[in-house]
Length: 335
Image (tube, rainbow, N blue to C red):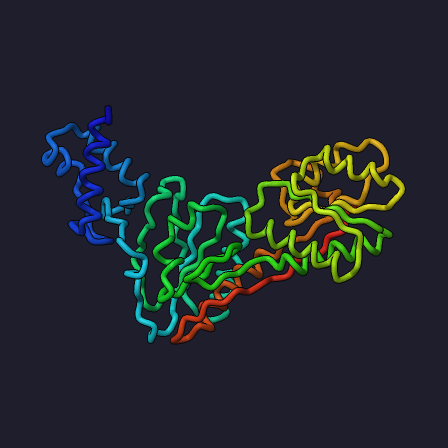
């Protein structure tokens, strides 16, 4: 049986969806919930928290609970004939958000644009509701993709083609997008392998990298093998035992194993106590405390990606033209 606070939250959610509380308007206060539903203050607070997690409301200090719902992302329309004056950067807890943020801030200052950080807690947002932040005609919005929740937390901005928005590290319709140049990165890694005398290449599809980057890096590897007439193999499973079995099938052929991410590359290196193949990663990022200092990889220029996101908004002028900008990384040879 559903708890009372959830029943109350569901009823208020229906009022929001039916237009009783337009986006940005104040919701019932705790006392108003207590009076309307004849319940306790504790239950009212739990109902408010449930609505927040569902994505229907957001808490604003000094303003209370505001409706955060639009029936359609197309309702996030902002006039196109207004000059860009301010960049709004959505920040949340992630190890490298600050690097993107710094690049965006510095580029905004160079262009004489105001810069504001909007702190959000993506863990509070539902994957069922696109959050609806108030849109100002003279603002441009930047979000960094680290998973589906950021798309829902800022969805009304990202997916509306008439809002000046830029998404970093993913591609989505409705926004300009800034991503790592996966094709250039794989090309640099293959060039390095060839320079080291490698005659065979294995691409290991291992790691928690997002589908966009995984697909692009796999495609880039296949293209390099095809057009340079190199001996290449894609390990679809990414299983270490499968990779080692493939290595053992031609033990005398110098081989490079390219991983699309650094963590699995470091774990794979631990499997060898004697001679190992050339092992490379990608992204210059690991959750491990050590090991990266010995791994050849591609350093992603997050600072430049943040700056490029600002440029996509600034250059749009009166007309919002979605574009995809690829920022090349730098080969870091550490082995």
